[in-house]
Image 1 (tube, rainbow, N blue to C red):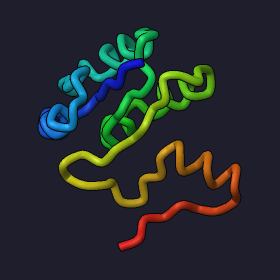
Image 2 (image 1 turned 135 degrees about the horizontal axis):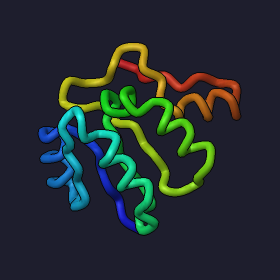
Image 3 (image 1 turned 90 degrees about the vertical axis):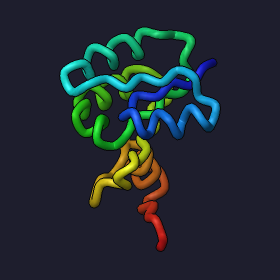
Image 4 (image 1 turned 180 degrees about the horizontal axis):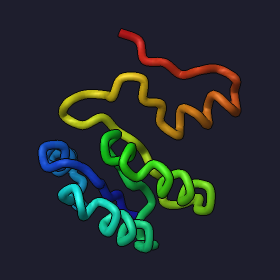
Length: 106
């Protein structure tokens, strides 16, 4: 299974250096069409999505995650850093399953 990323260009450069080859850096109006293409690719096991793009795709990501176990959607910060008070879906699942909130320490 492959790993893909939906991110800005600068984050994409870093991910390419890490060895990820399926990088998609859409402009603002192309985010949803690119997301639709990615969700139909059954060869993907993981899709990395920057938090800012995930915020724009909020309902689409939530609906997809509830209906499909794969690919796993992982939200990552972009070059500007994490969005303050942004709680990604994985953290929400951990809190719901374990009853403990996962926080980042300084």
